[in-house]
Amino acid sequence: MDNINKKVFDFKNNKKKRIAFIIGSLNIGGTERHLLNLINRLDPTKYDIDIHLLNEKGILFEELNSSVKKFYPKKIIYKKIDHFFNFFRTLWRIKVTKPDVIHCFLPQSYIFGGVIGLILNHKNIIMSRRSLNLYQNNFKFFPFKKLEIFLHKRTRLILANSIAVKKQLINEEHVDEKKCRLIYNGIIKPTKTNYKVNILKRKLGIVSSDFVFSSIANFIPYKNHLLIIKAAKKLMSVTKNFKILFVGGGEKEYVDFLKKEVLKHYLDKNIFFQKQSREDVKFFLISDVGISSSKEEGLSNTILEFLYFGKPVIATNVGGNPELVNKSNGFLIDSNSHEQMFNAMKSIIGNKKRYQRLKRGAKNKSMSFDFTSMVKKYEEIYDKII
Image (cartoon, rainbow, N blue to C red):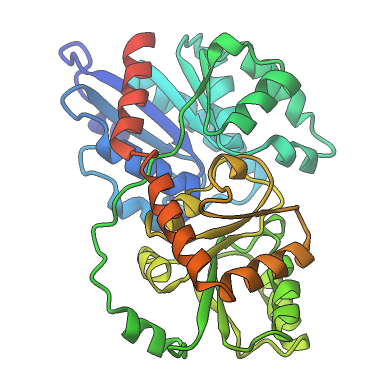
């Protein structure tokens, strides 16, 4: 407890608003990057920030501003019993630090934060839902959906990052429309873009005649990389002058499965696997087209980043993707249709004028998603409810 008390301010004399964020970790992922960037850009003259990490620190941890108060387990938590004890540690930390707002990102943190809010009778619990609710179906022996719906009624605000997610919350999970708000993701201009594209391509074995497609998504089955592999097999009958980059992190078993599929279809000279890192900006730079093959999405940060770099996008027509991708900047295809994926890839490669038009449309679309404006919307919400 002494360590906790050392990390907190003298609350009696502190007039700034205190926000406690809860998330599993700060490993590389869309939500994790989003939260990191949000925390680092909140006005430090108005807010004191705590972050409670439930499972581990994560790769992005070191990028947090030094002023942020950080709470995390001493070792990575895997076992259920350790999560049980960590719940009470988190409860105690929040009780001691007395935040004005508890803001939860991702399902695990919502269960922790929501229940802690009930125990402490905290009035300002916020939940950010950043995906469709299909994950609830993964819990066959635990009433996860019922628990979330129960918490919704006792949560001050629920923030959605797309119209699709907001509609689902209201129509399927019975969230009061008055407490459900839409805040689109914002794009941060990368600080390091001075990579030499030709050198990067050469290192990856990409020649000037190659057209480069990229999927920047963690290796999770619902991201559906297999759809791209099937489309690439068909594309080989049209042209061999293309490369596909799979960039991400994930379970080795799933990655090995994808690599076997690549070898089975003789695509090992066309499809490359790269680990996701803090320097993913280089993959956006060397790409000609971005691909999102996912079976479910909230609002994809990766699509937004492709658009910012002026890269057309081929995306499945799921979740918030139609709110980003249209005929002016790419192609929307039916979920799990490798035939439509193939046709979109072929169409872009085979029509230079269309490609240039789509590039301009991509850049224009990205202008609507300003990160500074997004941060102001969060601050307006915090200020209003405190």
